[in-house]
Length: 188
Ligand code: FNR
Image 1 (cartoon, protein in one colour):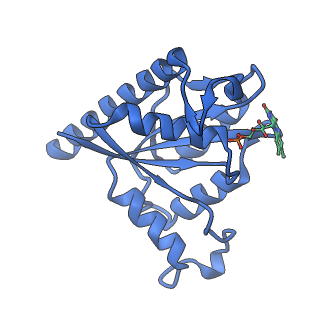
Image 2: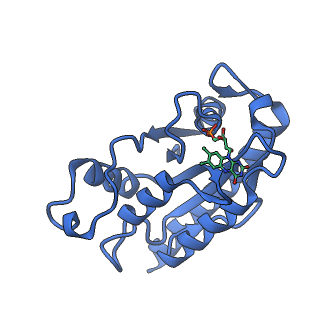
């Protein structure tokens, strides 16, 4: 069966290298899986006063997109040794309502990118910690960390073969996690 995946980029920058990784994966995965990219541009800052039944339209759209996908791929830049606030804000919205978040038990693959050789590894750690608290089902290996990313992107897409293979290995683990999650649901 063809899997449906949802891509979230933690960078709003037009020429974002992280978003370029998602675009490269989109091409490489077809037709095995369809990867839709959901833009976090329209999300307001999290405010518990505005959550609940009358949550903003963009928040409801994000929650629906996560609910109806088989698995999520999150790509974040590292900002000051953490994940981007854009992505953390999206995770905070998606984590509610408490106890029945659309991310609960949802398989999620995290990736970080950086022009530095460290690849955003510190942000990677933080993303997995946040996902564990929801609890989503983070794919804990092979930890897709992409350093010197600006040298691996051309025309808004990741083009470096080795990097693409590395990222695709992570997606394979995500697909395994999706199958395992399905088996658990069928058995329940
Ligand atoms: C950065 N950058 C950065 N890089 C890194 O490897 N570690 C870090 O801690 C930081 N911190 C940081 C803070 C802020 C506020 C900015 C704006 C940038 C650099 C960052 O990796 C670079 O801007 C990337 O190009 C952002 O990713 P996109 O937009 O290309 O996806």
